[in-house]
Structure formats: C-alpha cells, structure tokens
Image 1 (tube, one colour):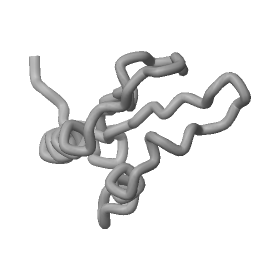
Image 2 (image 1 turned 180 degrees about the vertical axis):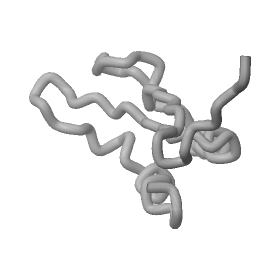
Image 3 (image 1 turned 180 degrees about the horizontal axis):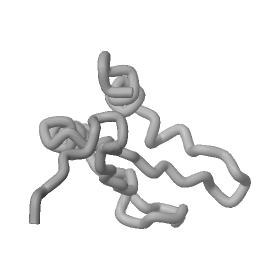
Length: 83
C-alpha cells in the first residue's frame, strides 16, 4: 500500500497539557511547580514541536491566585515564536 503525504496545512501540532501544580483543579495549599521545572517542560515541548498548555485553575471565587503568576511564568507565554 502506497503512503500518501498530507499537505502541511492539514496537519495540527500535538499538545502537552500540564497543570501548574499537582492537581488539575484548584486545591487550597497546592504548591505550584518551580519555575525551573516549568521552563524545562516548556523547552522540551518546544523541541518536540508541540504546543505547551499550562493549566492555572481559578480559585473557588473564579479568580486566578497571584502566587502562580511569577515573572518567569508570565514570560513563558511571551516567548517569541511560541504562540
């Protein structure tokens, strides 16, 4: 059977979904992963050509807590060419 090559426009990149902490949903006291760990995951997914999706769950009031939003975490989404 001959293999057919799909046009590049029909191919979607893979995705890697990762919670910022240990739990997918908000849990009081759940500690976020370190900036070093998140940056490593971000770089590894970029090297593999997949999108890195970081789940930051809202608290019980529907707000994103301040603590997970350190400058390094915010910078992850501002990296050139990684949108």
